[in-house]
Amino acid sequence: MSQYFKTHELACRHTGLCQMNAEFMAKLDRLREAYGKPMRLSSAYRHPSHPSEAAKRVPGLHTQGRAVDVLVAGSDAYALVKLALAHGFGGIGVSQSGDTRFIHLDNREIPAIWSY
Image (spheres, rainbow, N blue to C red):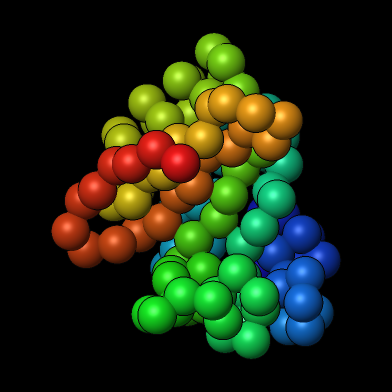
């Protein structure tokens, strides 16, 4: 499925299922190659029954295997966002405060950037 990410890193933490989108994974692998260092994921595929998705009115792209959250902070977060934009990731969410700092990446059609 991926040159850089193992199935257990990508699987839903609630169900253990892993249904990542192949096109998204190819794009993520190209980003990881350009980034040049490991990318620790806090979330990737989420089954619709996952508590984070079940609480939403409309399930997000994690349920389609088209999104990941990368644990990263500071200058590494800046570098990752810059590369993600260059590699065509359409959705970029930035959480850079508190104990858990991450960048959300997805391949949505209409580009968007937001903060948590």
